[in-house]
Image 1: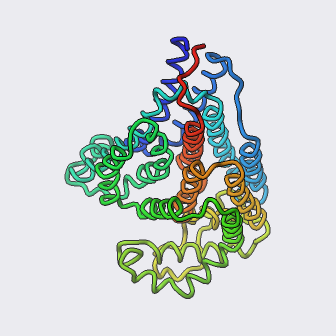
Image 2: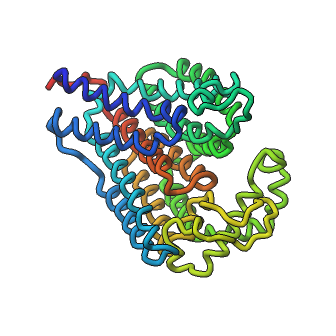
Image 3: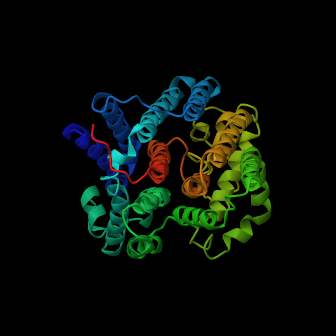
Length: 409
């Protein structure tokens, strides 16, 4: 390779590595850094490597369908004149995410291999930064946000960064396996990740990692029927989500809210279920099409007794499928359930067992956090999902690639 090609490969990996660290100091940076990395990577491929870009048509079709439905839904939204700008912004973030995936699919991974170690290294560095700041009284956070020494800082301040670390973990570990043995990886996990999980306030992140580990170790990857069953379960949950949460709230909310981890001031099970319940019941007024993009924030008052959640309004439902139903109705549910089930079946068809053990647990972790945590259209969350996808692509391609050194240009 020429010096410019070496630098382009290094710069792309450096931008990828900046994403988890930047999320610690500027939590919303994940909304633009993945797109910046994708743009830099694609320009390098076109102008420096003179390589054509590769991008899976399945990804393009899925993202285009979502963006199109989001834009179309503004026609039946509460305030079309104001709302139309929101799906445009979300579509631009998704388009920039496609650039990142295109770069991940198009780079010769042998050219990236000398520098890809920076990504898992940055993940562990980000975890250590959070642990240090939390245990030392938040000096980093106070300095960055000009917070007075005596002012209380909510421990949830690093929940987004923790979620990003958790979601990138499996693909990062798969990449790291190319550079060091399992003992070194185990030591890094014990020294960096374990303390993070102990100090974090992110129950969504803890739950996502637990589910990812269960899928990693227990899912029968060699059995096609297991993949079909999983795809069917995911599709069924997507289609029944609002009805299911209404039933769960009616019958189990009180019991769940008394459990040590999920309730009793240590969790948000009761509050989350109440939000899902009243948003779902509101959605049933227009189940076919929903109420349009970001509809929840335009409802001034929901019908709720405020048993656990002490407000009758909410910006987003903290559950991606309830949000899809609220905004796009059964049309959006069919699209989402179909895309998720199709992605699972595509993994079963295209990936080896070792490769699937990177992709499937990462997907389940994303679904877990999306089902309990953040608004679907937040720019940092969209950027995070595309970063997870791109890093999975790189980890899988690195597994496939031989250890033969890169061929000089």
